Image (cartoon, rainbow, N blue to C red; front, side, top):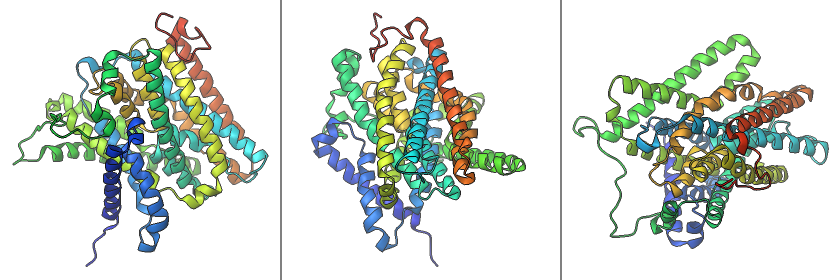
Length: 473
């Protein structure tokens, strides 16, 4: 009898890469200085392995893409189920402002991607897939799971290697998140954007090396909420997470069934909804959280344990997403990938401090960091940057982000409905679909501008040439 080993082979490879990455960060100053996550380093260890060494061993990247897709939703569920208490209690303006900040990057990145795609199609790459540029916001602002799922869906439209290119944009986004995030922190220190308490957290040695020194008092990461002879506490928490994910699967199956009655358009929309399954997972997590509270069993869930589950999922996901990239496909599109991702990264680095320093009146740098991290990497990347200046999530910033996902989902529904328009332009040969998508993105930019003005009010356009609005302004 043969048993399936594929998923455990992939997990074993990822595990070894993460261990090597942890060793590297603990010893090499470069990785400490730029706070490069071990998962990112592990991904670049896996990249050459899966492209050159694994194929002769009959080990492929086929399973890595699936891991990326599922682990992102798992991380969202675990973080959303966390209780919000004390100083971390979310507030309306912070939630709405966070949503506006993230949606602004959706619009800006989509516009950049589409315009540069049009430029390349009109000049040196006339056969470039029209939806190519949409992989910038998918890879940067939504993450590897969505970029892979939707990019792979476009392969049926004729976009060869779409899933791998989506993962490439996501990997580049992680690099922008790490190096750009550290730049923002260091620049904020020099310019006085950061408090003395947050500065002290940054300078702790164990934050930079990635491990706690020998002999130090180790922090407690989890608390047991069940008796182990009945059920292990970690098992108990995993059951909530996995059951919530199962419910999101059933919800998507139901929506897919209903949309099938709308014909091809409904089926295409269903594919896109599966590509953003993490949003449905997060929404159902909010429902589950409410049910748990009503049943008065919320005390049995421990924030620390849920954070560890989310962190584990993210570490595995980031490493797998980079390892799954096909270098053969990437080399074919290296020029547009380089140009589009560079412009998108620079704009995120400049526009978000400008917007956030005017929209928010509290925890401005913390909010900038989490939005920047989420807009170039993933939600956990934003949390990692936030943790540098808010190690224990004592501010409402992280909770505001979690609650903002519901607002973001509602606002981006038209974008989700229209995301296949550029692909239809390729399938039908009618560029009207492409220009219609440009119009949708332009409308989003106008809406974002209006929402920004409503939030910032008189601060909206003060000192327009300053990237960061000073407190006294």
